[in-house]
Amino acid sequence: MNKVYSQIAAELERGEATCVDIVQSYFDRIDRQRDLNVFITLCDRDNVVERARQIDRRLQEGRAGRLAGMVVAVKDAIAIKDVRHTAGSRILQQYVSPYDATVVERMEREDAIIIGKANMDEFAMGSSNENSAFGPVLNPVDESRVPGGSSGGSVVAVAAGMATTALGSETGGSVRLPASFCGVTGLKPTYGRISRYGLTAFASSFDQIGPIANNVADTALLTQCIAGFDELDSTAAPMAVPDFSIDRLRGAQGLRIGVPREYFGEGLDRTVRAAVMKTIDGLAREGAEIVDVSLPHTEYGIATYYILVTAEASSNLARYDGIRYTDRSPGTPTIGAVYTDSRSAGFGSEVKRRIMLGTYVLSAGYYDAFYRKAQKVRSLIKRDFVNLFASGLDCLVAPTSPTVAFQLGERISDPLTMYLSDVYTVNVNIAGIPSLTVPCGQDHRGLPIGIQVMADFFDESMCFRVGEAIERLS
Image (cartoon, rainbow, N blue to C red; front, side, top):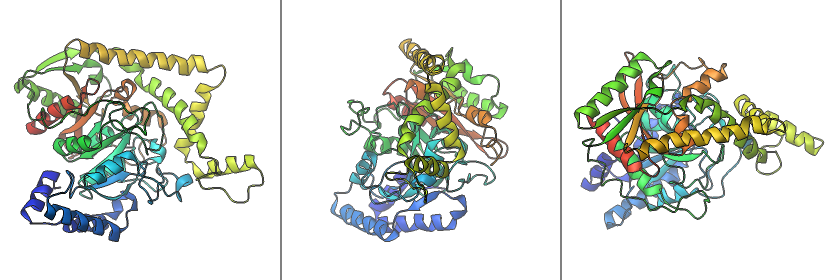
């Protein structure tokens, strides 16, 4: 069983372990499980051990931070100074970041220990982690199956015991979907709750950094330490960060919890439905009022999402041109050839597909028909959530994914089927609200099933409260 942070902290306090011991044990676990292909770049082992030794000294002196002894894997879309930063792409395979992301600075300020950069779908574009230029990550529960994407490496690092916690990023479900597939907990925070400074952009009005852990408590603690306003990120909200530990253990008694019927329709696996409904029944027994509700524009989520994010991706990825910090194709005689050859060789097929889709929907003659209309539908989807929370609901619960983890290669040649993997996650990103996925059972093969808790803007506390209640039911 993977240790949660409270166990590690207790061992450190009792003198039964040191940070150096803990770091060494994680490196040993990584060495034994290299077949899972979790890390693109490991941090220098000697430097990591030396940092652990320094934190041990601070523990002895009684001045260590809140995350002392927590070993963290960081998705390779999040910048760490002097460490290779690829975003899962061949075009950035030689790039070394000259600065730290804000979340990295905040974790290290609290004495977290970063162990490496986790594998991911290229530029976070994927639902299976099969789009990485560095090969697919394998699901530790069943290595013939995908771990989910795009934060598959970060999630598997936690699920397979290679890190205590991890950071991923989410544009349309890239934390919650793999967390559901691998049986761990993952948070998509409110847009603006956690700084995006240092996160490689995919679709800037959607992208968020999210924590991943083996339980709700660790997810909440890591969120507590990295959240908050950041002057380096113009989208960071100037909102105070509440103490997430205050309400986390209050249980479900007295809560009004909505169950959106659109998340239980055609395409939902029967085993997933049964596990989620059993969990909802458990919340009712704990004293929650369960309310049948509707999110009427849910069906338009996938189309709206893939129009908007591909448009933003087309703009964001224009900077990767072979001129500045990206790989450049050799022997190119003209500036146009530099652009064309470098991007053709550097980008994978899924990234090229999304750039072309985005360029198309932004082009003259199609902008109004696609992009502008999608923005209007985005407002309608957001309004659905706003209206429900205004009616007195405390949160919504629904399946995180319509299925359990699917086979490697099963959907990679069918983009539409792959995109539909995100059918229950994208609307949260479209609206910008927080959502926490928590394990709620397994199918007959032992494959994990996840349930997500969706709350009002900046009410991550409610996500953690209901998530903890669900955790106690299992």
